[in-house]
Image 1 (tube, rainbow, N blue to C red):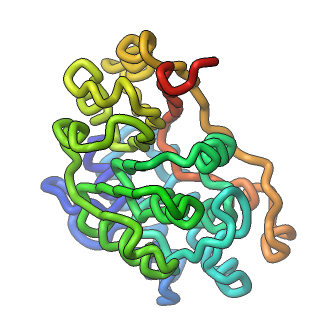
Image 2 (cartoon, rainbow, N blue to C red; image 1 turned 45 degrees about the vertical axis):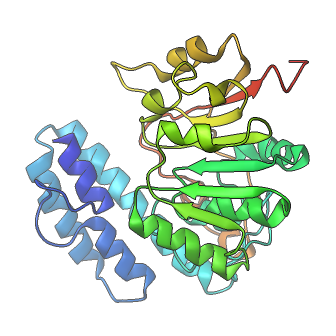
Length: 304
């Protein structure tokens, strides 16, 4: 049931997904300016939820989430009428964005507060001047393009299984004049680590739980010398943070960072919104906690 519900909410076309328009499709129509009456959206959501969520508590929770997702799209449309699609603040301020996001939230990226708990780490990365950055699970290219703009002498490699994500990444690179700087590819396999240079590597990994298979320094020794930022996807049966710590504690300094809802200055068009709208403007659509681990090679960083 949960898989079907996630497919429905995020618009994934897999077997078992309910027929008809998904909530994501409807929200995309709202962003595009097509009229979608609120009753249409509400009835569509309620009909699907009744089928998928027999328990009242689960039903109400999912309905709240879908309503919140829709509201962020409305806020995005409102903001786009007065603010150019350029990152407003944070370490990637000034980067031009595509008009909408094909995957995940958009407003926090536009405002510049996206994953704000990592902002200091990005500033450190930029100062470090790595020779190669490998972005595994690059999505729409926010980090790959953002770093390419600020690190002109660094080779940027971006990978994603999704063809749509790869096309968005290329589009974002083109929009910012970074198309020649970023090498975009599909699946990144563990054996590909051996093709990277021995030193000066920074790996960004956000692959929805597959990090448990990929980030194994015993199988892929290059990882012992690389600095790594990984978003950890925990499950009841897989404690990714414990696994990462066990695998890397002898070779890396490890810092765990939790996501937080930032206090962020908002554009004037959003300052008069109610408090719930202000929270939704910086909300990143997370379903569950996904902390990050920053792993700095002891070989490269003598003091921890």
